[in-house]
Image (cartoon, rainbow over all chains, first blue to last red; front, side, top):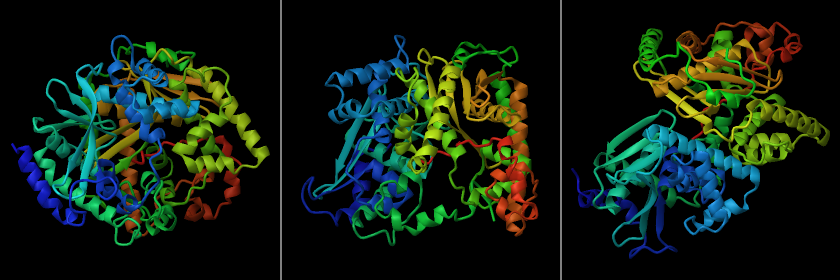
Length: 287
Length: 317
């Protein structure tokens, strides 16, 4: 079993080349580099997208439904199902309940009815699948979410992420994924390592819940450390290239990677993808 | 068949006498794995899992060459837009407390599509005002039919646009799909929404979904149903062992075709073809050697005898 300190030393060693490019001293919001688990997932798919400055964070369907689902999770139980829990949560948010974060409450108050319902059905589906894969009828044994952050010593480099749930009895972190691919696993690796670094008494495993396949898997955190470091370096390279254009960065086109990417209009990889190249689709060659 | 007047009634359905047990599903998985192993053995694959979706099964068994359409440009069209809009409406109806009343649908749906499928929203926005009015009328009518056929879902929990993936590692095959609606938790019913009419291929699609759900969860859904708007119908079926076995056999047959399509590509040849009215929908038809000699206009005349449009794509993320 690897201790949190051992894991931290491994991470410090692996990230040294990245850290040396960051300003000396303690973390500072204005000058430091922040690498979030979302960036890691994005860079794993397309470094260019992760290097794009992107737009300022604007709450919309895709970046709110999980937060809403997790917020409503404690309301799922014998008294009411997922639908009732979500409705109660949204009603509370609209009435100024302090337990709902301000940005989320603003979204729930301001978005039009159709988008609210669209967000809600995604939240409902997410909660249903999470409960089904965990094999539970309610979330009484789980605490929703926890934000995690770790700063590289004496350098302006911060890694951050969040677990979806923590199982109360065991302190095991639960990370929920739509599917289990390399990019998602890179994200999981970072989050798992951050969890162990932040919660020193954390158990040595994380639970990964996969909606599309119905898998619920325990993975040792120590076994994810190298993956987390490599994925973070890949992401840091992308972040360091911000403003310099996508040349030399790994690229891959998809709805989510290209959405909001400042290079999308001129990206040859995206153009090739739209021209239906390469001609291997889902495991067979076509033409 | 199960007689229901609304899809919501399926939430009350209990398993049929011959509903497959978990052990039956396990046996089916073993058989399917073995059969797919036979199909893929000795195949020099390009890497990755052989992907099988309901659309691939459908196309492979109709005309192997139609699989080539996957690498052709598929310009958006009205039927795709309508199909996507009724799917969006079904998702909204699952959760809304306000929309189940007569509602102006096009605006709310476009509001959703601008976020989830911006290209489709732009396609609709590009319509001339009169054409957009026609589309509005069509969508409003269909959504009203949909609302009536689904019934009041507010008492039931369920999912919309749920993704299913089943990986069979030994033969290197992945089955995947996305359902429009799944109602219920203990006894689940899968509901497919179609803008067109009920046809035999829709029944096959329902079987594919039942198979996916059974294999993924080691538990078969209780029922599958198609809500078809052009003929204002609900066709619901209990999930039985025979239904699952037939769906599995179609997957095996489709896998064999897909391997042959790959082999033809490697040999620089065109896959086997089966020209007919469906060519009017096929993006590969303009380059298909067996269609080139036949006027596509002949097929165009029968274009609306078939309805195949379904936006069941892989999840992008």
